[in-house]
Length: 249
Image (cartoon, rainbow, N blue to C red):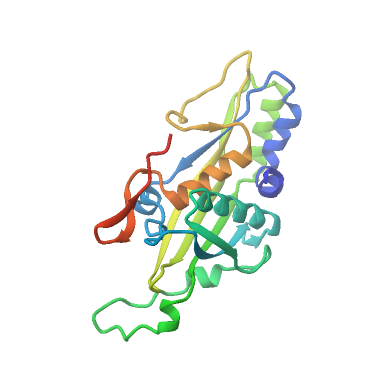
């Protein structure tokens, strides 16, 4: 997963990593942007009946507007892992690693209202579906690259931190009765260097959890987008039969 997401997006970080030796203390942080969707996650993503329930899952990872097949595979595995571990879903992949679901995710939702036509029974009985689009905007500027290079040369004595990647996440979910909703959120990945000998600057990173490598940080971004930052909240289910997850550790 690390190389899949990091090949282009974290090129500047690799420079510092190559120079790090045993004295550098490199960390990755996830900084969420405030949004209601990110707080709650995909609230409907809990089958009201006992599982495992069939769920079609299609994913696309784009960096600088281009689809990355390897990163899409990593994204699929991260989403699948997160939603199957509770035994509620039987996930079936839609398409393959190089498929671009951008148009399907961004398509206009049908208008809701009393005048809606009767629902097509075929839609109501179709498998539930989750489409996930992650659009990465990496910072590959020369200034950022140079600052990490200098930090590597000084073995982290020159502490550096930058938002190296912004991840815009769009999720389209179709429930068991055919209703659809789109969720949008954004999160930043921050790469911070420091020195095990001279310490590091934590300014601006207070309250953020750090990760030792890109795969763990990226899986957290995916988990936040699907399950939300505010865990333990009532999600879906029939009236009087809601499902509630325990708070995250």
